[in-house]
Length: 460
Ligand SMILES: Cc1ncc(COP(=O)(O)O)c(C=O)c1O
Image 1 (tube, rainbow, N blue to C red):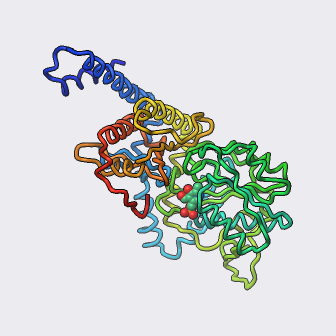
Image 2 (image 1 turned 135 degrees about the horizontal axis):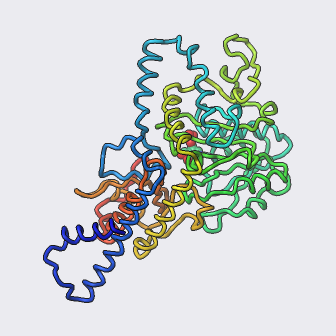
Image 3 (image 1 turned 30 degrees about the vertical axis):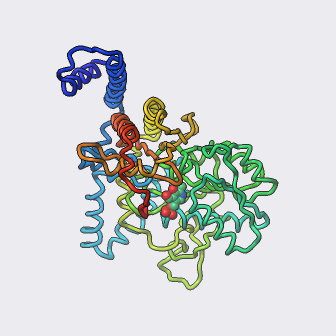
């Protein structure tokens, strides 16, 4: 409160020198509205002061004080310790130790980092492996599940799922050539999918249900346990894509009793561009499932160079080839930060931030054609928010390429009219949320987005 009043006084001194008397109703209303908005800024500052995770921000590289990064749901920021970690792998482990590093530490590195990741998703270390990309891991596990459920032909997903996941299923259907049917659960509001709809699509004899735990556009979060139980009752295996969930919401594979999971590590896990994905296979299922890619890293004893493939006894059977050592090492530094901060604390801050953002959106952006396109109830949301606006694309450009002396805000855009705002509790602040909403308001109020054309960049 005191901070807010001080700020208000300074703001008036800076901006309204000469305005000594309030001589009209409209000036009065204007100042009243202004003071209300400033109280919200002071509230943001207050929240930052009380934030128990605030010191984690300094663990990330932030050279530009005028940049507000709201895209950690696509590519997480660079942890401060990561350049030194990668320098060590490149300079010492590769440069000095050369091939000897394989025996010294590289061969076990994938397992070591996987075991850290397993803590984040409530699994045992011998149930998780880091390898390949999310799409490739989905291919491996979906094939394994369908092969295991030979007599069942129904694959169920939903229309909110990430397109790459659906492409992988379409490709599998084609190459397996066994008359599988892919059914997509529909969303009535474009934001959520009901459990009843999933149940309906599962039908009587489903082979596999595969969904994103947190959907990429609307941020809708399924109740993993409820949906898994529902599918299990019908004899289906369940495979979750955790790309938008791992590191942003508490996930517990054991509690939810899910069979399989995959996910990327470059979003909330801050592993860096192209860092390898992970996969999870429930312990009891491992011996019954086979990977479709019989590579030497999934072989029982790769360095015996046997001419015939024998799958490794545990989760390693789902590896294929040589793991990407450089990005495995960048991932490790970031996982350490997440584990130290604790997923419950991260979730608490994430929901506080998204609630705060929604209240600002309603107050400042609803009058300008914005609409919330994520669930209102935070129990049903991940850690990003989607806003719809007919000019979403040009607004996203105006935010990220601002005129002089204004903050640069980096969100992302998803077709056809979604502005996605990622809130990463380890480095985003309440003040950033406040300032980015104010930027959006100015851009639409002054129609600054008209200065940009509609042509899309390759990557949005
Ligand atoms: C939910 C989801 N699934 C799958 C993918 C594809 O991941 P990858 O490029 O690692 O295959 C992404 C990429 O952003 C994603 O968001």
